[in-house]
Image (cartoon, rainbow, N blue to C red):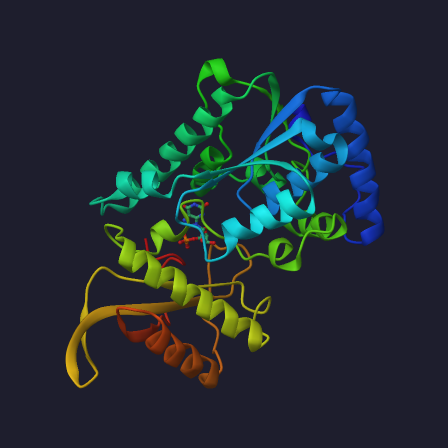
Length: 329
Ligand code: XMP
């Protein structure tokens, strides 16, 4: 357990200078640990795995093999950004796996939220395992474990843990490389900024491992998933435009699995509602709902209603946590 305790002498990383010091130290350590061997990393595009990738690219370049699994439950533009930043800009060795059909086929007809989470987690490990088996001579597995993952006993973290590919079979156990395991989230962000990662990656709001899967309520269908992805993209665009990104802790849309009546082109329509969820919190254990500017809500509503297929109603969820959780499932 001793090597899982943050050294007391470690200063908080809250300036670019300290971030650079940390980066230089880690690069030296990673080079010493890895030598000329190869490292594998599941790169989701979230801040933790992105910072680990950027550190390893600087330390060992092409000896790092990144695997990005697109499970179809990421937000609009995210898989493309991973490819753009890591393959095109940082020249990383990146394997992009299009597993969209595979995940959606496995999830078809499954409405129980915990079963959905389990399927997504298990399938993720299976896809990653298949990719790992295709590769030769990998000795290390890098993970974006951060200090709260180690010190918090939040059962939700167990879900994240298997996204951190902790569930690989015995014969695929690699030596672990966890360069940010003593950092808190804000420190990971300062390091990410110093490593030159784009702001929308570094300051990304929390996003659950099962992704849009827990926001497309009940059994996931492709049409509702698309409505969810498009409405979420509109919400993010309008929050950016209104200067709310970074001021509101987490915000997203949800699409339930029931329809409601509307009128479109003079005819009765029977379409999906979209629910806007926005919360402020310190630790996600409790959360309040911000008073969003009315004009932002109106703009988001009118854009969703006119741009997203199959939607006839937009709602804003005013429920704090407790009693409601932040996610709907
Ligand atoms: P709740 O819904 O429990 O969410 O109020 C608290 C925070 O945890 C995130 N969350 C998850 N993260 N896997 C994750 O990695 C999950 O299954 C999961 N469920 C909720 C949620 O987005 C919020 O930030």
